[in-house]
Every structure is written in structure tokens, then in C-alpha cells.
Amino acid sequence: MVLKKKPSDPWPTITGEYEVGNPESPVAVCTCGSHLHNADLIKAGAALAGPCKTENIGIEKMVANVISNPNIRYVLITGMEVKGHITGQAVEAFTQSGIDKEGRIIGAKGAIPFIQNLTPEAIERWKNQVEAIMMLNTEDIGASTSKVKELASKDPGALDVEPMAIEIKEGGEEEEAGGLKPMAAEMVEVRGRMRGIDATVTNVGLLNKLQAGIYVGKIEGIALGMTGVLVLFGLILRVAGPPSRSRALPWA
Image (cartoon, rainbow, N blue to C red; front, side):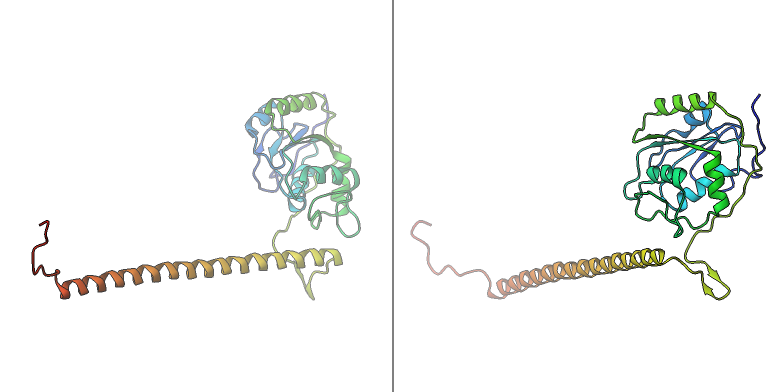
């Protein structure tokens, strides 16, 4: 009989788009950008199954839910890779190498693979507790459920530690007593670019609305002009009356 531990109460600690199975199962499933039939994965023996779409806050939430349950020893990474974020590869890199001093996942290829809410202890716990099993770029639910069953049959037992509960903060920059929380220079640059992109998108939207208004105004103007011409032409015909026939035409 392998060792089993009681997870955090409540568990999972972070809400999300996932389904929950037996908390004593050694397998969690990350379906990346795909929405697979999670119920089948749970029925196959997964403790947790659902998507993870971002290479930053998404990974942080997944880590929080896994390390709060020492029974989970395998994380199956399956489903289709998320374009731009490249989340599946980021999870693999995070598990193998962790983060650098700036908070960037070492070796991650995604757009913004920065971890801000995980302590060094939480990262070390993740690396010691789980093995990432890669089955990326497939939505074959049969293959995924078979892998879950295989991993469940190899249950090594819980990591002999207490559950680790951590808080994940979302939203804008957090503030400390003296003002904004200090950030690494690279992170400041990334956030600055993101704000610039948001502003550009907003401006494009406003410009499109303006152009649409001008176009509609032109159409209305043309319609009104044509209506006016037709009305004026009708009045002229009415005043002038029908043409007189002073004499019969030869063929009449």
C-alpha cells in the first residue's frame, strides 16, 4: 500500500476550467489549448483535468493546485499547443529548469513566460513532486485516457510532505507601502509594450468607428440627394403637364 496524504482543505485551492476526480490519484492532466472531454480523463483516473492557456498566470495556478496535493506525482501535458504562449513547452521548461533571477522561465519560448507569484520554495516543491509527461499536439482522447491509466498504475505514492498552499494574485501591478512593487527591467519593458499594444488596438477601434460613421453619412447623403432630384423632377412634370398634340401624326 503506497503512502497517501490529505490535500489542502479546500482542494483544489484555485478555481478554474477543470474537473476534479479522486484527490488520491497520482495524475493531473493539462490539456493546454484544447477542451477535451475532461470527464473521460477523470474516469480514467486523473485527480484533475483541464486546460492551461497562458505561460505565466496559467502555470502559476496549475502549480498552486498541484503542490497543495502531495498525492499528484505526474502531470500529463497533452492537447494542442497554445499559439504565441507555447504553454506546454513552458511547463516542460519550468519543470526542468525553473526560473532565472528576473522571474523568466528558463528555456521557455512563449511571449511572456514570467512567474511572479511562486516562491522559490513552491518552485522547488513542484520540481521535486512531479514529473511532466509530454503528449503535446494531440487531441486523441483515447490515447490520453490510456496514458492516464498507465501512469495511475505506476503510482509511487504521495511525496512525504505536507500540502503547500499559496496565494495567486491577479490584475495590475501590486502596490507596497511606498508605491508600486519593484519589477525587473525586462518585465517593465514587456508591460510597457503590452500597454502600447492595448492603446494601439483602442485607437484602431476608434478610427474604424469614425470611418464607419463617415461611410454611413455618405450613403445617407447620396440617398437624400437622389430622393430630392426625383421629387423635383416629379414637380416639374406636374407643372408642365403632358405634351400637347396639335395635329395627328401621319401614322396615328
